[in-house]
Length: 186
Image (cartoon, rainbow, N blue to C red; front, side, top):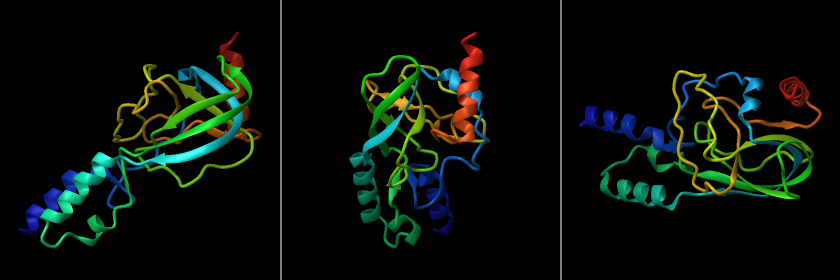
């Protein structure tokens, strides 16, 4: 019975975040040249940030807990699921590449690490891609990439297992992204 429980936990752990495991063994270093995968690069501020919780995953979890005689504490205390994602607006200050309206609705599936409760305030540089655009390659030993739940919206650019392309506007990373964009435009 213990062997079955252990195998079961390994099998279902990739669907939970904040409880058992993430889909990445380690965080991969970000490659700022991945900005070339972006359809739009803008500077703006975050508004209306929210985490969209997956009701199907929660219902599955609830039924799973009801079937288990003595579920492990780690399964009882699950706070997020990999199929959860964030949705927010970016109030655009200016576009570096691509066209952007005054406000851009964006999704972000940080499924490999879970979405934070809030995003930083102030001017940020964002690299965004269309849902059908190519994503940067995997740079870590493992990852889970789920389909975009709102394919009509732009999504935050992020290579699997790496940090997203969201930087404080005056940061070193934002400066380097601008340099990469300038040199690729030549």
